[in-house]
Length: 542
Image (cartoon, rainbow, N blue to C red; front, side, top):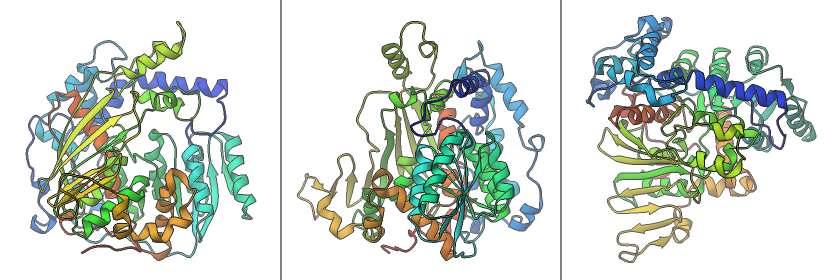
């Protein structure tokens, strides 16, 4: 991998730990910069429904895609409010060094017009009329950037999928890269080229190797740089979640995918979990009626993982020191967005967000480390529970929760409610008016034979034993299928941006007394025209 902290079962050397904590110190020093840049929607003083919500067919004539791509991306100074000015506004509210998000009061002074300018990219013109599909290919040649815990799992999945060649592997942990390359050779394949010269060696991989797809499973800060390097060098890009955590980076991914005509896919595995896909099928069949509301989240006690001296413990905890919001919305929101036709018939309109005080990580450090240990001196600003409400353009509502710093069992909530019934996850159960006994749940397994998604029927045996109950294999299989058949991918760059932008928007709302903030429309109105989602190879419903 091209960033630290993901190699499985390898303790971190002292020099590497030193580099990690230098990065954490950098994050603290530049906490204001990270926070302000990630909150680029900035200071909408009142929520308002803007003209951007009007579908493309009803808007005035705009520049064509070719016209937009012939122009270079505007510099900071050409935008309504440049980054240097935004930084000044953020710094104006900062108190002592390392105050993190506490000083974002300056950003609240942004006007609605300036905030809208940061959210939108009118210079891009309209999004493509049709969803992008690349030319079909017989073999998908893949380069991996980051082969630690999740990246290594993906390598094993791709080794089990026909029509895949693993050409290159990049990781700052050379020993881990060698280990994973050995898996490829043990499978009777040619040894992949290794890129282990440092954090930015992925740039050399993208420039030199003959690849179709670059797949990154690195710490969050590297997702966008790797994807941009891939697309700028003529490769498709796939990334672990979230794809980005600033508004500007979300737009950068959309712009690059359109400009270079390449796929940029966020690998949201929970879209392919069996209960989520069954609910998608039930909704498409009309069993739940009109879908009006959903509740979802990522509720996972990660305290032990965050404090490890390896893997995610080397980088994930640092975000809690400078950010406060929902850092990881996509696992819960992805599946319900699919059911609610977001980007394909409806669009997220605005959200409000709030966080509890930060207690969990401080308490964990005090309970597990002696007096004087550096981890006991760390200070966190991330609220232990973040709660967000989203309203769509069509008036539907979505509740999203993030809860990773407190003791609790795992849950993604996964509640989808319509006019005829609902599904409630954890434990999974269904209620359908006219089918269920009044006021009593049915176990989801009672409905699975009738509403199990065709993809699971097709791939259940092949996905057995793969990561996260098989859904990781299915998401990888579906990506390869789309590339080999020359079809649009199930998830596209607009979905990646829409789901990921929730991160910075919640941070802005939390820092501004839970005021509403608009969600950028990365489709630029095409959501009203694009067809509803059909998972490739398994159309369901009407």
